[in-house]
Image 1: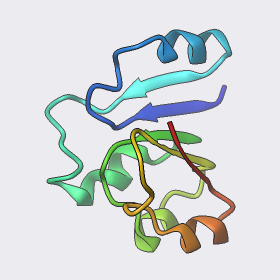
Image 2: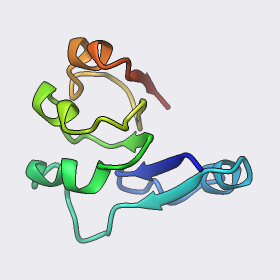
Image 3: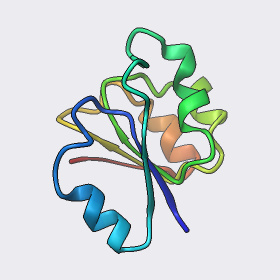
Length: 99
C-alpha cells in the first residue's frame, strides 16, 4: 500500500484524505506539536518511509532528499518550489508539484 504523509498545517481538512484512502493509500499527518519549519532537522524523521508527501513550507534540501530513498512525490501545499532542491529531486526521480 503506498504511503502518503501530510506535513502541511491545515492539510488534514478537506476531501483529499478520503479520496486517497479510497484509492488504497495509507495517509498520515505529522503530529500537531511538530513544526517542521522551526525544526527542519525533523523532516527526515517524519517523512522517512513514505512514498509521497503533501508538503508545507519545510525545506527539502539535497541532504534531506538523500535520506529519503522511498520518496517519489513531493506535492507542495500552496505555490512555489523554493523550499525544494529541484535538481536533487530530479536526480532522485522525485516528482515535484503543487496542489
